[in-house]
Length: 444
Image (tube, rainbow, N blue to C red; front, side, top):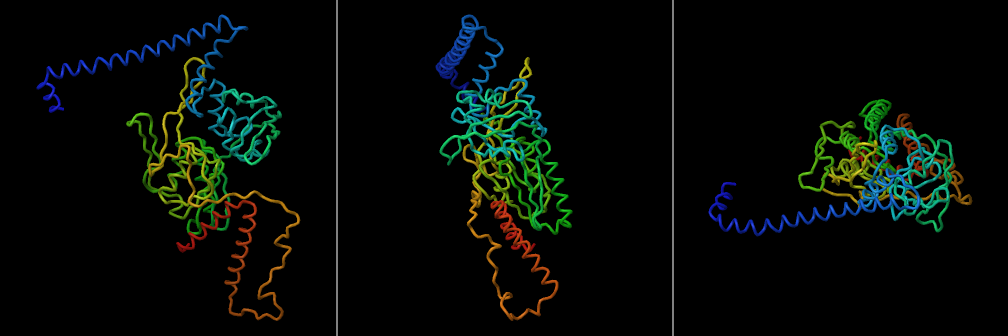
């Protein structure tokens, strides 16, 4: 700084001329920019007054202003929007895990509503709504050209009432209708099950309950297995999880990491960087993990998958995720109880990847096959299993102990259960096979 000042004083005349040459145009440019903004605001005011004075019917000025605000925000990106007071309250209720509606996470695409994912065990899920579906109409009324808020309002209605949505689905030639009965949505953030010595944790959303529920169910499952030493590994199933609260995603990632960065968020300015790091402690003490994702895994789900993948803590299996790599800030607005949802930053995985519009690529791509029901196809039970033991007068194995025989029978029973699961959920069965292989390599 002292050298810089010395240089300025040494050439004070030249410096004064230089400052005058540069400061003048910069100041003029800033003044011109401000003048343009004021002129545009005047233009808005003129249009607003013309509508109020000359539109064919009397208008609601509050609705006009809200529409203008929403148009301004929705022009930025699909996730920035204006939330009237009622919608703002609905969003706050959703993060607590119970709300009324259809049970779908949506965004906008090409003027229509695109389904990010249906929520497990909700009316939309039961009706067969799938990730990637485009909703083109509600009760026969087109959604083309409507804002997100307007489209959501059309889908709202009393619990128990019917709604008919028109769906355009990739691979299906013509649009088709789905009937859905609105209901109160009570989201159960986490479910658990035990497959052999593997715990499967199904996370359906990231709300205020997610981490605590996951930690509790995991501990209960480990106790049921007889302790951590009996645990072969964990499958973290994030398929069709649309995301939710950033801090919950950080907590879930931290549950399985000992150290290192989990995620960073970066705003417009270089100084607008926040880094979130793991704290010591792994709930499963280093046991192997598989994370399941698909095209319905978005936002917070991608933070978790990306963090565990970058730290080589888990094998990511399934299909490429949705690719929502932006962070929205909910800003309450004064006066009417509403809020604006504004995209303020992007998030990056520990290796510096931005998954915005790209998604998280799985380490192993496994597509869920479409079930094909063919009554003419022979079932496994219809074909008799032939082996040495089925041959007439076959020699018996007298060297096998009772314990070895029981172990063989248990292994056979586990294999048959996996075969059954493969027919029900191919991706999950694949994940379990990977975990068993990793456990065997580690001597567990």
